[in-house]
Image 1: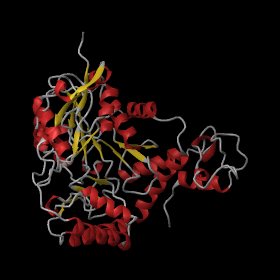
Image 2: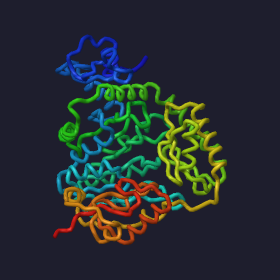
Image 3: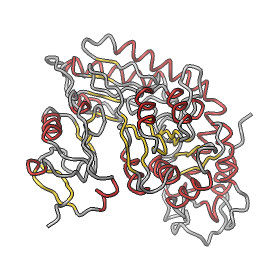
Image 4: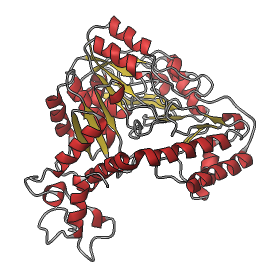
Length: 466
């Protein structure tokens, strides 16, 4: 018997018989106006629920998710884990507070630091020297930072990182709690964690006080579906709710909200079965792909994560991507050296076989002289802080040629992928060493993300006072 999904069921009931509506959305799913896409669109207020939300279908769905993940509070978002990260930044500390932040943070957390006025103290992950990919944040680095700065008010981590690596969360949580500060985890890429014995446990189960996770990434919600989960004690849950609502739309899509409810029901009822199959599919794919000479198949902490390094094959990732696109296959991320295809519980033996077969053909056709991975230097550079991200965001800014940016304060982020760690962040000094490293990576074909000019010919910097 399927578990209850009150919001998903309410959406289905409304769409079966919406009656004659005098509410938004303006298309009203009307014949001759609304196409198949618009036919699934409906609001929460005066749609899935009445104008007073008296049926509490969303609240009941959120409480079921809180129970599943072992949280005291759950909120469904229609704005992805970006919304959750920023709400957690607002809810965890106050303007001017210092917080310990993993340098692997998503750009949404930079936004959270700006919105909340928090001052980051960075902690770096280890990096695999062979691939340039980010590994976990050392627990000792977190405990040392907390001991060195008793004024820290929270710890923010990204677990798992984009390439599927996890830190040792339990001792990190213990260190944070010994310092009486919450551990907050961006688990956007780990909504499936904890729902099969072959998977790592999710962050809350490993000691975190709060996490945000994208139900649309590795589960089955609509794009933008995400949930925020938290426990009380070191976090003020009322304040977190207020922060969530402050950033939340007052016109949420009931379809997106309901899809998170449906994703929760699916993983609760069939997660072990479906994820078990997916784990086997990825294991089989890894075994086949390891037979390709020179191809590096990453051993991620997450057994569902498939990360492929092309440098040893000599093949160019963009050329391989073009071959795959011609075969009707799309990848989540590609750069010259790295391919990241996402395999989820929705995949089958057939879909994964198509991927592996196409990769084998393309790499054989595109093979060249082996080369070292492009990302190999910027992660080791130490940033020089000059002002907080919030100060840099609101300061007057100007775009200047890169050579004139040296010695100035950056007003944008530059993060080479891989490893995806910011080499430069708003409020940090542009040193000659950092600029040369970034431009070297860009010339080598590494994708430099988050900056407006990925060639690094120009940089956005804080304007100098006249």
